[in-house]
Structures are given as structure tokens and as C-alpha cells.
Amino acid sequence: MHEARRGSRAGGPARPRDRRSVRSAAAAALTAVLLSIVSALTAPTAAHAGPAFTNPLNSTGPDPAMTWYNGNYYLMTTPWSGPLTMRRAPTIAQLKSTAPVAVFDAHAPGRDRSIWAPEFHLLNGPNGPRWYIYYSAGNGDIESQRVHVVESAGLDPMGPYTYKGMIFGPNNWWGIDGSVVTINNQMYFTWSGVPTTLWRDSDPHIYLVALSNPWTVTGPRTAISAPTHAWERQGTPMNEGPVAIQRNGRTFITYSASACQGPDYKIGQLEYSGGSVLSASSWAKKPTPIFQRNDAAGVYGPAHHAFFKSPDGTEDWIVYHANDTPTQGCGSTRTTRIQRIGWNADGTPNLGVPVSTSTVLAPPSGEPAGPQNSTWRLQSVNFPDRYVRHVNYDVRIDPHVSPAQDSQFRVVPGLANSNGHVSFESVNFPGYFLRHSNYDFVLAANDNSTAFRADATFRQVAGLSDASAVSFQSYSFPDRYIRHANYLLRLDTIGTATARADATFRLVS
Image 1 (tube, rainbow, N blue to C red):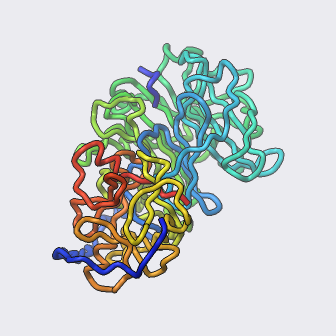
Image 2 (cartoon, rainbow, N blue to C red; image 1 turned 60 degrees about the vertical axis):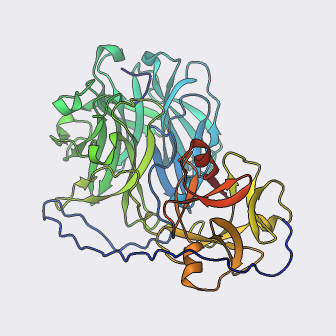
Image 3 (cartoon, rainbow, N blue to C red; image 1 turned 180 degrees about the vertical axis):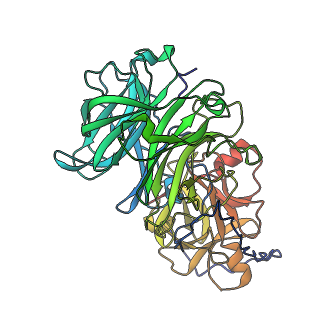
């Protein structure tokens, strides 16, 4: 859970320069995998228009919550201090390079420290549908942590927001990691709390209580899970971060178990079995975890999570945080990752195993083409006043580009490979693309040759120096990346921290 815890243009088109031999791409064979009846996953036909991507979505991002709404993904993570922030973008690839925007900063003393785990929901309140953000905060002492609520002014997830209060009202309940679930037309609040009034005296449990409105609890609370299994007690006995996922009339609450400081932070599952929602006996705990470390993939402590639907509503996805090594702990090293989940033949969720950060993933089904076929500028990460531009058909990074169209490109599906690859077409010279030649870059007309298509195609990956930005790997020379050197654009191998920064960009609309 949290660290506090245990140019101008002249002349005609450039002539193609002498070429090296281009490696032909090997055709990838699709293998049909038969799933057993017990663990068979439903897999509806999906339409993936957006570019492929790799995890993580940022360079730091604990306790993520994410949704798709009205044409965009929205993502929040723990800010620790300062404003609650949100990222917004129409594709996962763009979300990775989008800067967070402050959406609420009116933190009064006593709730201005240890700001953790913001989670946002579109709920019907007294004034109609509004967005509500639930987050944990206090005065810096973990014993003061409580869950607070802010409400949007309208239907824009980016706000503005106003503070509604501490959700527990007069109850002296310790609590973090709040979420909301509606069961049988009644809203309930679920969170991680303790049986006594002091966190340090007890093991955190998963609680439920009814809500009279999105910011007010009503009636008694019920503990529906305690860390009783050995796998829930590794490092520290812990149940926290509960979130609901519902399908075919069934309600599951999944939660994080064991200590977030260690690699064995994992996810467990509860299911509502009928009867009184506020009766502990109405909730059945799965005796084994459903998502945990994957040493072979280099993923440790994968938990504190949420779920979201693909843009077309046909797929379920999990967003979670994890570390790259078993010793990184419960701080800012945790990054946000996502992957598609499935459903077992018995109707229970199948989260699979956490995938490595080198695994290329298709975007959620129904995602728009995003940066592909749209107009973008490539901003240097280490020289943020400079943008990739063409001048006399050469390519470099410059500030104050005039005319602006010299730094604008249509990011289109890769000419040689459209699966997770892109090409850059000039806005003011349609049909001319960025291509490498003798490891230098030029703007040249597409002659539709195999060599041209390969030299103008790049795989978009997480930024080499900043995972929240992007880098571009050559299709024809996969050991080389687009980078700037002395402000000129080149195709180079990347061996130093400076080179990694020079090869990292942001897509700016």
C-alpha cells in the first residue's frame, strides 16, 4: 500500500541515399491454444485500432485507479502530497506520455499529508450523476488516516471538484483505500480498516457499510475479511485496497494482501453469496490468491488494483502497481501496469499472471486509432523547448519552429508493419515521411519500395529515460532508436543515460 507503512524549405525532394541491406521481418505464426474447461477464458472478438504498448504506464504510479469515459482513459495514482492529479488520453500509448493535471488541491490542515490511493466513481448523488473521488489522507501520523470525498461540478472527470467531507462522519473509524459498490440497488462503501480505534493495535480488515449518499455512511459496519491465511500474512498481516467487479449478477470484491513493502503483496478474492450484504457469512473467501508475483517476468508485489472496461465494453482489464525487483518496497518505485483479464468457466474472474514490461500488448478493444492518423509534434524530453522538425528536408530538433507545420506530423500505421508500429508523415508535405538513411534522418517522398517502408517504420515503446514518455525503435535495425545528437536526428544504438534521454520524446497534440 504505502511507504509510511510497516525550418524553412527549399528545393525538391531529397534523393534516396545509398542503402544498407534491410532485414526482412519474419512472419509471426498465430498459435491456437486450447484452454481447459476449468480455467477456460471467455474471449469475445475484439477490434484493436490503437497502437500496441508495453507496461508500465508511468515512471512512478502506486495505487492506481483507471476508467474509460466519453472518449478518453482517465488515470489517478497516489500523489503522496500536493494536489490530486489525473491523466487523460484517448489511447494507452498517449496516456503513457501525458502529464498529470491537478484536479483538487484544497487540502485543509489535518488532511494534507499522506495522500494515498485516489479512486474515482461516477455515481448518482442528490444533484444527479457526478464524479466522486475517494482518497486517504491525514496529518502525517498513520493513526490519523481517514477517507475523504470530493465531488465534481458536472460530468467532466477532470473537475472542478469541491470537498464533501470525511466519509465516516462522527464514527471514529480508522480507514484507507475506499471504494464503492452497488448491490441490490443499494450503495455500499468498502475500505481497509481495523476493529479497534488504533491501526497499530490491529491487523487491517476489509469492511463494508451502507451509504445514504456518495459521501455519507449510515448504520453499522461489517468486517467481511481478515488476514487469516498464511499468504495474507507475509511480512505483515494485511487486507487492504478492496474493489468490486461484477458480472452476470455476481459480485466479487478483490483486495490486496500481505505487506506492500515486500515482493509477496498479492490479490485475494471474496464473493457475495446472497443474503444480507452486511453479514460476514454472506461473503466467501477464495482460499488461494488470484494474482501474485511472477519472478520469471520480473514482476514483484503486483497488487493495489482496480478494474475498467475496454472502450467498446467487451473486455475487462485490471490496472495495478508492481515493482521490477523484490527489494524495491512500498515507495515511488512502484509503477502502473495494465492487462486484460478473463473469466473462468465457473464464472469467477481469472486475472492471469502479471506480464513482463517487455511484453507487447494489444490495446483494449474499441480503442480509437489515437495518435495514428492524427497530427502530433514530437517534443524532446531533455530539451522540452525543442521539437522534431524538417528544414530543407533534413530533420533536427529546434525551438520556435516557423512555420509550425514543419514540426507537425501525422502519426500513421507503420508502412512496413502496422502492428504496434508507426510512421511519421509530414503535414505540409503529404506523402513525405521521416526515414533514416545511413543512420541520418531525412524527409523523403514515399517511393513505396520495401527499403523505404522499412526505413520509415518504428515501434513505439515506453520512453527509455522516462516510462511516461515514448521512444521509437527502428523496424529495420531493432538495436537502434530515434535520437537527437547535437540537435540533429539520428538512428543510434543507445548505451548511456544521455543517449537514453536523447531518444525519449513526448507526443504533443
